[in-house]
Length: 88
Image 1 (cartoon, rainbow, N blue to C red):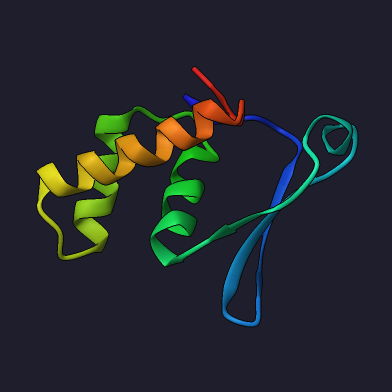
Image 2 (image 1 turned 90 degrees about the vertical axis):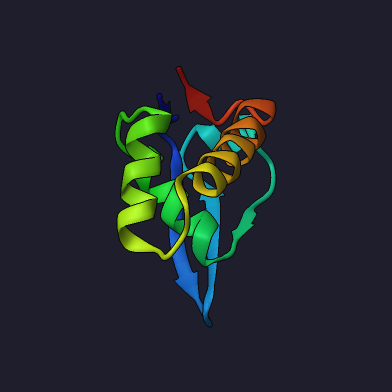
């Protein structure tokens, strides 16, 4: 799965902001604010990746167990799906 094209993530004053760009701004009005973990997850899903591969990336980067990482990532993916931001 992969985040749809048409979004740009930027760090502004210590916060991570995602905004639609180009034609995507006609479909998605608003912006998304991410914390550090959400930003890391977003970067993982900027490329075509599975949840299991994302879990491996997260557990290698952060001191977190696999079960917690998977739960957090699945919650993030659920939010992406609910907002039509991800392509399966």
